[in-house]
Image 1 (cartoon, rainbow, N blue to C red):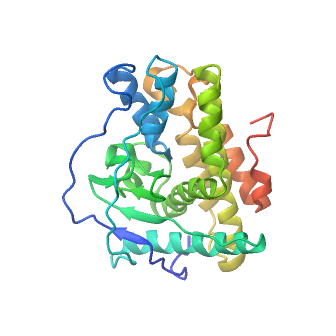
Image 2: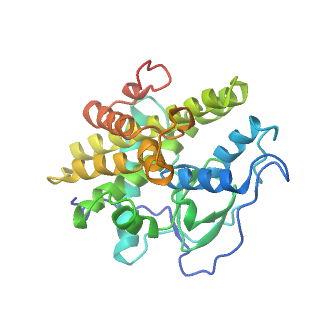
Image 3: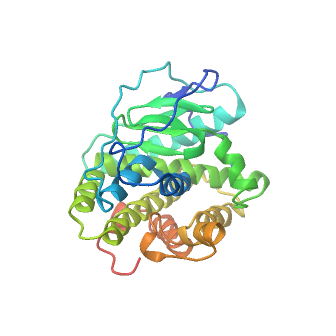
Length: 302
């Protein structure tokens, strides 16, 4: 992946040098989910997605916990700009590319794109959704329109998930960032609030999970749209890059994670989609390069 020519975003808050701490507030008070379920949902949230507390809250609805209660806190602003180290430069470059692509797409539809901020942290940091912790992996918090990223997750992609190797990991890492920005696009388009409402009205936990899967697969597809449009502008993709992204999508599919963690696959419990589904929807976005191609909510066959 040739990212050096990408414009660097000024919307990166680098707080890696600050001390982190605290824990994840458990939604719904004392009742509802056991700690084992919370840990499992947290690990699923690790595999790319929205703040895991939203998944935990959604599960609480169907275990007697009532409506999800996500603790809202003010996220203190930090000075923003492109970090000077290579890892920070890479993140700022990919974020800058997503800004350029989505600004162009929104402008074509007569709209103004309002980019998210991305907070780089190490260990833990504050978000409007509560504490962001490294163990949660990358996530988007719609309450403060920020992407949260501890770059240790990039190392996990290579070591724990065995998703990529060497330099080809860079495109897979860019896919991770583009996926999270995809959730921001969903937020701007009003998709996330509608999806949450649909989950609350769902008749079962399996139905609510299916809605969450559609949210995640659409973010995968939006990541593919970014890759398509950015490639047209800069021609940055190198041989093996797409394969690395597809390998990553496979490694973090719900079926892959469940098979590794519990030895069996339970499709009704999927929250992010199977390996094949994640690969398929990234590929659709990448081949089509159109937002309209990513309507996972009307797709009968995911």
